[in-house]
Image 1: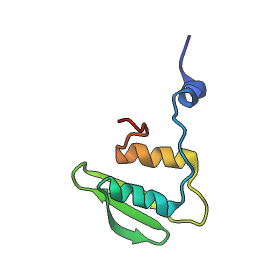
Image 2: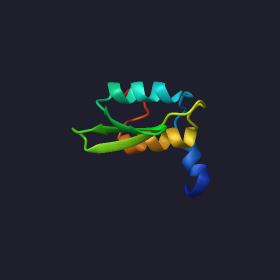
Image 3: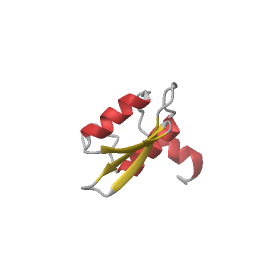
Image 4: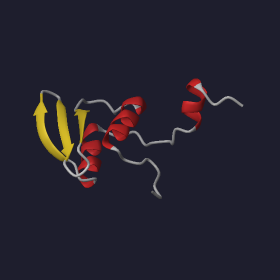
Length: 83
């Protein structure tokens, strides 16, 4: 079986809860990130130990699943609870 394309991406994507932007900022703070600055409605967070920087949009809506996965990937975090 060929595991390429959109099906493979969806098949191995873990389910994530819908998060408000401020909840995501809290998760990143717990993971060792600090608020470096805020430009308009975007918070720039930095983790010096990992050398990673992520941008979190602070809007009234929940963060979409695609953006949430992208931020988690950029932050170098794992989505599985046991890891």
